[in-house]
Image (cartoon, rainbow, N blue to C red; front, side, top):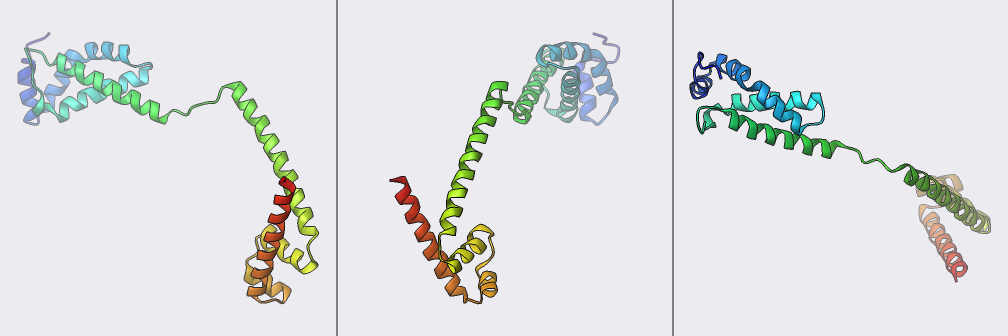
Length: 185
């Protein structure tokens, strides 16, 4: 360790006073050791660089709270480096997207196809049941239940009151529900 620029304790006192030069001296003095330690904790060069940078930035921001146990600030830097690396690893885990295994993706696709086919079959059955309704009830169901037209618009198109449209939708739903229940038994 080069003591010509002062001890780590003296340099920390300079940091507390707002002098920037001690930070560059401490960086030159300890960056190699902190970087080697960061390589043991992080998988990529980018992560190592981020960890080392954040470690020295923490030293800069918290210089007044750093207690130098002996003559070197290196133990504090290494503990800080470990904490920064752990925080970075947690952030990576939060941001990582879980990928499905290849066979799971194909199983999911096959399952989705079966579900879509069942939905189409059920829709055909419902449409057949709607087709069997009285003509005016069928048209109300097509407009309101299938096409999603608001009751007021359907009433205007069909020349009915909104109450009549609501009543016809309710009656048609009951018929459809009864047909579904009979079909399930």
